Image 1: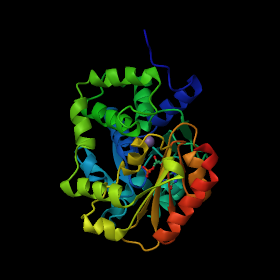
Image 2 (image 1 turned 180 degrees about the horizontal axis):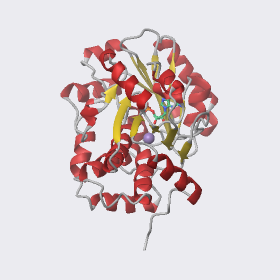
Image 3 (image 1 turned 90 degrees about the horizontal axis):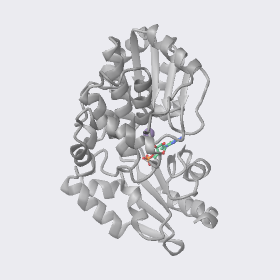
Image 4 (image 1 turned 90 degrees about the vertical axis):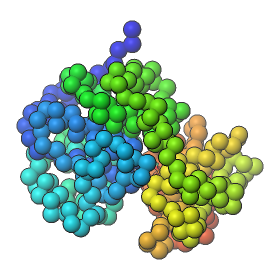
Length: 350
Ligand code: 5GP
Ligand code: MN
């Protein structure tokens, strides 16, 4: 019989229990450009903490994409970039007994919204629950870092389970955690070979989540414009290099405007070239619609091709081995050149 391996060793478990016991007001943070895992893990952890009677505030640097707007309780998330809500967030942070960072382990992932300074100057202890490489440890009181995990949602589930909270987990809480596990694994297509993942999924299903509906909400929620936009980019903007082993997809703010681009419309697009047989590395370059000379970079790879190292070396970013991101401050044409150089340098891995 498969059983869940405990997430925390006794000393770490005791530390976590003590931190939770000593805190009543807790603020949770997710990263900039929140994805299903950042939002799912924050909402799932918030639901558990509320079940313990805690007062919880969830803060994100910016809005969730449209395809995550159905998530239970997402409308209660506070966005720091919205001028009007800043004092309220500042007060919550100042009054907090505990701060939790979910799905990121480097403060820079909060973006330049001022949240970094807010966290740096906060007095409350800080807990980090995350699955990215190279966690920062300065001022972190409890670090739960598992780069081998499928998602932060998996970690939050394991943590709640170990703390004895599975019994009272609600359907909504389960739904949030399932959503992040699903989105970070491409609906269990990658990063999900650990058999225990499916034990967790079965435990979440026991909470009566509607797995098929969650899938449709996330992956089958295109607008006609979004579908046509993808069609346009794949036919007119996608370039294959090195005999099809690598791909670069670069698109401008004008391309996006032509298809009435909305936040989240590019989510998943970088994976498309990998559907071509033999394609092993995909780089997408998206011009920012508001700031000039800002290019958002996404990288995806298969097997041992180290996206995170390529992202660090060429794109001011990082991430996981097979899924990374970064940012360039140059024109789109210059960004394409940089991507071509990066691919050339790593040609031996392709
Ligand atoms: P996406 O392509 O979905 O924007 O990002 C894929 C993954 O790359 C994210 O889950 C995150 O782990 C990582 N990532 C994206 N942008 C950055 C960045 O600027 N810095 C770092 N360290 N990681 C990033
Ligand atoms: Mn994640």
